[in-house]
Image (cartoon, rainbow, N blue to C red):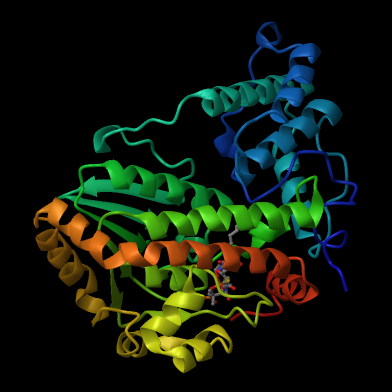
Length: 397
Ligand SMILES: CCCCCCCCCC/C=C\CC(=O)SCCNC(=O)CCNC(=O)[C@H](O)C(C)(C)COP(=O)(O)OP(=O)(O)OC[C@H]1O[C@@H](n2cnc3c(N)ncnc32)[C@H](O)[C@@H]1OP(=O)(O)O
């Protein structure tokens, strides 16, 4: 059974509009223009903006695409005038919600807002990427990632606690940018951690519901390219990289741990790689690092059968450096990291190079192979059905 072209997925429905995708969105955050007619954009400006969207050099992310979708519909058809899709049509429902949230905003004001938004997007996609020192650090595009630098430590915090810090497409991009900036900033150590009770629930499974114009094949191609770039940043990261695992970790947030230098975990953490359950296969170089770290049979139990490890088990297998009682986790770990961050930074970098460099070529090859296998997997019925089951709330890990 193929689920992608119809049913709950984007595509082939009355709510579809070329180039305008979806994702949950707080429409009040749009800062909508409701000003007088004298300031409003012409139909020609609007048509130009519609063409400009297709020329954007960077994908603006799903939240922005949903804003564009809603404004486009409002500008061309006026207030939402179609029935709300049923529960199973969750994608169309999300789009409908965004359009409907624009209420009685006039077509003209929607047109203006669309033009303004496209103009901001075009400007930012044309500006050169800054190679900034820590103080001028470019902030992530989305609030779902918070990057701070203090006491010689740059901290990259996943900040989507209501969704268990599941990684959106934009978050992957923001993490790549944050790692690139951290590799050049003044800090001695870089930390990845999460907000709330979870460290990270892995890839946001709704990422796979945003079908681009090129369909499933194009979606799988671009996902594989993003995955490869994302993992490459961890392989190449030049400074000590520490994971502060503040709660359960799932999927890609577990597999990339093999590319960290040190992993500290609360005793509440667990480590779960349910790839077979999801019709997927390992990534993050785990098909290579896990057997090296824990031996091939323990790695197989995790990567083939999805065995979930407790923090203590993960520590015994060598995936975690040390486990701390949850009550004192933050205090103990940060005190330790602050002390380490005072060590000579160049010595730490050079030592990391000696430890990691001879593996780099191999890791890049493994990453390329894993990404290419996943590109096929993501187009399989096994994978689509597993994701559909989660999204329809039938299955939880
Ligand atoms: C072009 C596209 C580019 C795509 C990017 C490409 C790169 C991808 C490469 C990696 C691919 C795969 C690797 C993986 O990471 S596989 C692992 C994926 N993760 C999961 O399967 C976890 C699914 N989540 C759960 O099973 C459960 O939510 C939980 C984590 C066990 C927690 O259970 P809970 O009962 O404690 O909490 P719950 O109510 O379920 O969650 C709260 C809300 O958060 C939502 N949510 C949690 N995790 C995810 C997720 N991974 N994806 C999407 N949404 C998630 C959950 O649905 C709840 O939402 P709501 O409150 O109901 O709206």
